[in-house]
Length: 351
Image (cartoon, rainbow, N blue to C red; front, side, top):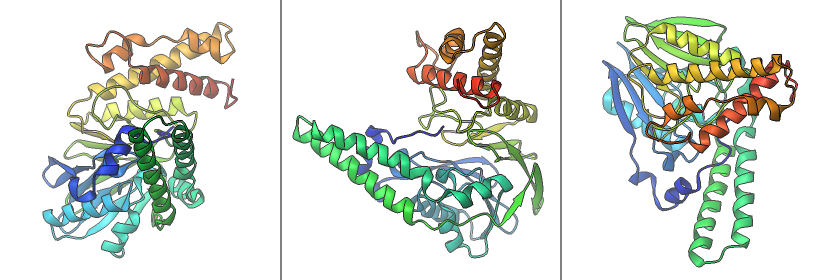
């Protein structure tokens, strides 16, 4: 489940900030491997991470940003690093905040190869603009209702600015050309660029048919949203999944653990330089699944009863060290994950 609305605070910040005022964050992960992070008040939706790998003769890019303006900024940064062309793009999954920049890369680098799983390409082809449009409409409707009840000029101005941003983002996302993958795979795909080995694996995260990238020589794992993380860099995971595939998602996290990665790049947020967050998230999913299954085996059948039987507060406190109670977002997350796990255990039937 993606974030359904854009945070009002960052939306308001975006109302007064121009692209010229905002900069990408660049982190060198290894020789020739770079992580680019956009500020959320530029990308508006989520600041999707982009990883660029400079090879002997060309560049490989993992994910292409939420907005065209951000994709152009990444392209400009790559050109500062090297004059080698981007020849390969990897799209992690079908959510548009990870591939809306495909068109900008294709324009800048004609003939670029775009790789994804067969499932991801099929989802992209069927999706149209549905991923953003419904959530944007809800955000606008809520702010229009708030505007009708605004009690000050400042409040009215803020809501009007936010509505204008939503409307502009809706128009932008509807008009961006959908440039689809040109090469698909199932399960696994390994390729080389010069001496550098790239291993792609089909995994389950907040979308099925996702792709994660592992660079074995550098021990760098790029997960897309198979490992989710707040853009701020702290706190609990901010969303769950569109499907009810919780057990396969846990299997993906276990697969990641077996890689013994030195650096882990989540879909959003800063890179991790150990496996602590990965291990904690795997522990969380395992505990929820165990408790949901245990509750059902004791005869509990209603969602309310099953959710009441699940208690992972001790794990939640470890996401926010020093807190006296789990973050409210964590409680929301657990409620949704519990519902999904129960749905999965009932073969897709919602309780």
